[in-house]
Image (tube, rainbow over the protein chains, first blue to last red):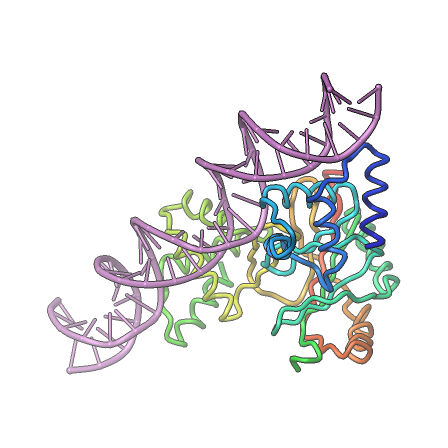
Length: 140
Length: 140
DNA sequence: CACTATAACGCAACTCGGTTGCGTTTGTAA
DNA sequence: TTACAAACGCAACCGAGTTGCGTTATAGTG
């Protein structure tokens, strides 16, 4: 709830309104234990005090993503998932039950690789994505 | 062309036919300089001697993927891309023009990270995906 | 060459995540 | 209270990917 309030306040000082959908969506993401898809979010909102149109959810997600408060991830050929933006991290994806968990990885491990690629391939690296696929504790 | 022939022969010895669609699709993937989406493949096939139904393309891709001759990759929230399977590698994705290039990365860089994750997180790592996003030579 | 089994194919209809245009509602500041 | 624009809902749409089913074509056999 703290993060939701903080984001709403920051947005307000930039001239954006504290709307019902925006607040509900932020609370949903903050409460979630793992990244959510838009259909997930729609269902969770609908089981609350009121539901919102899917167009609204997509637009709000897009808005918060552009504003830097939400980050998007895509795993293999699955639907896009969203979570509150935080420090850079990666994900553990269970190929059996599908749950997604955050995991911290020492970036230094391949920062030298990025520099090598920039030199050798003439490619300017701006970002990377790294996900691990395997079996979570319950599914082994 | 060599790879296409080799795959068709191997499939034949396992009781699978050398059909027009299979051969055309393999040639398309072998000729391509970068991974292709199914719509890409459909277009390229259609500009050749004959076109094929999209269901056929999807089924053939699925078949070749299962047989281990084609590998699939998904970048962020884009459509699935396919390429002939080869030694494990990663990709450089230009965020400007969208081109995708293969790149070899020293796996040892984070194999220790995978072992650390297995121990600390109780997660059995089976596979990983790593893509670099940035600007290719022409787009810098 | 004819026959046969089945791998492979085409077609049409469908699913579902995601988008667009447009008119309406609502939050906020003056 | 008013007025402007941010935010919203609705309906129609788009495109990747799937499914069921009947048809065609490949390749082994007699």
